[in-house]
Every structure is written in structure tokens, then in C-alpha cells.
Amino acid sequence: MQFEQVPHLSLLQSGLAAGIRMPNSCRNGSCRTCMCKLSTGEIAYQIEWPGLTREEKAEGWLLPCVAEARSDLVLHVPDAVSQRGD
Ligand code: FES
Image (cartoon, rainbow, N blue to C red):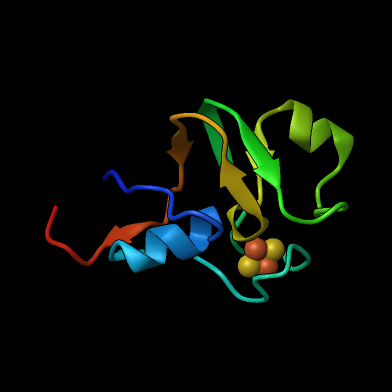
């Protein structure tokens, strides 16, 4: 599944807008429901303290509800479901 980052929206919001159902709940970086893994690429956070430990960040975990792409990304989102038929 592929989707485009919508300017000023989070990765989660961009994915949902593109018809990809991704796990989420609080959408403010605290519940960790959306936690997924970054395989390649760079992101930036929209908030100063996303709810991840330093170790989790170093391992590539991210919270897409409060993150934006800074390059092309490959994400591993185990429970993502396309509603577009791809
Ligand atoms: S939806 Fe709660 S941390 Fe992302």
C-alpha cells in the first residue's frame, strides 16, 4: 500500500485520507495504539515529546499520529487495511 503525505497532516491522517485504515485512538502521541516501525526514511514529530522511549526511537518505532514524513518512507504497520482494494 502506498500513500502521499498531505502537507501539514500527520502520517496517520494522510494514510486515513488515502483510504488506509490504520490503528489509532488518541491521535495526540500518548496512547501508542498507532505505534509502527520505520524501515527506511526520515520523519519529524509535530510535538516535542511523543510517547516513545529513546530506545524505541533508536529501534525505529514511531507514532504516525504525530509524525510527518521528511523523505520517502517505508513503514511496517501490521494491522493496516486498505479500503481502496489494493
Ligand atoms: S493514536 Fe494514540 S499515540 Fe497515536
